[in-house]
Length: 594
Image (cartoon, rainbow, N blue to C red):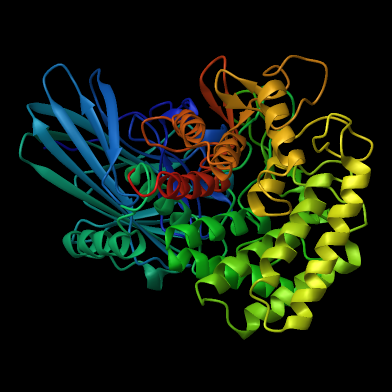
């Protein structure tokens, strides 16, 4: 092993399929193929970034072979412990990495274990954290007698073990970093433990072996076998991703990132580091189907608390602490190529109807497994009362557009009322909820049935929308209702390309030019076919959609069909939720024979 500074390496962003996610529920890290940490906000998902090269900022933590290499990687089964693997001309090296469990809101522990598999390779290691979106570089670096480096970037304090041979260096801007070279030989390993904390009291360095064992046990406790699902590896991975995105307070962020463009240079860059009530309900319903009780309970708790707090004024999204999402504003960073940096989200000013219905569907799923307590039932009554008071109002809809009488929202409200009525604590409540559901469906049918017999997006918008498949899937109508069947046929005819599904036709341009295919819509098609008993078709759409990922198995919101590229923020929680639900649904549909 040899120590000494190396020059800071340029770390441009990669295509999204090449990133892996490390997460502990409170925050996440995106790891690139060069072993570069390109993204991490601290202390929480929606805080400022410590590593931000993903969107053109600075700050990274890299463990990279010094010579030319090819890259691969994989998750260890049932968790978010990632192994980067590099093959050079003479050697093979792996780096095992994870955010340690159990997690803490004010402290993160990053574990990295470099391992020689074959031959000998020189590995460059560089730690260069920069807080507040890169504005606050590392300062005050000191190495103690145990070889542990300590320093501070803005208000963030760090302690780093394993890098005793590193040297402190300054770049041309005077920013401090730590750098070294490790000669890694087959059979050898070296641990690096990075502790990130809000105060000096949290900088105690854990021993690496016990920390690894605790992290392994943490993932074993969080993710079951999922042997009752089709594609159990992907189903387990979906649970791991959803769990990794869920904080101890119960809130699940919609994605780990902000500002990753859906379409290049079109200004469609959003901050998804918040909790969408709809998305959390999707995850909870999938967890109920899969028997993943901690995820279900977290969803019920968070959605229920927000309903009890805000009632009919429920917001579409909140911070993980249950606070209001800040207004959208530009971030002074170049952004991911093709995009612009933004934080905050304009959804904070919207009214959306369908989250009330999705909450009722979630509560009904929980009640079906005897996991809905008195507070949950009070929240269900609040949701039902809000639907009764507001269902006729214009709302922004599932796609967060200009307010109108979106058909999907009204049908999902009806589906939620129907589902909740089957578990209602009194016959009077059940009868009232069913009557309201019938009234809403009848009104919507009169206003938004297309002349062809399918559902249309709104009374004044005759287009088909993939979200309208949920009417038959969730029980607003029977799955084989003529309107539901005609809607499925129209989606297949008008909104599909090469086995992928678009959400709707936004303008006169061909599919794929305006936006990418929406992966959640492909899973909805699979569920719709499953409800009709057409299991071969359901399997085909499920398999096609779940394959739209990279080596790490992470799914974004959109898929560029022509270029076979992920688009938008990653990983998108609701896509993984629907993958999980489909994996269970497929197994049930085939009678349990896989």
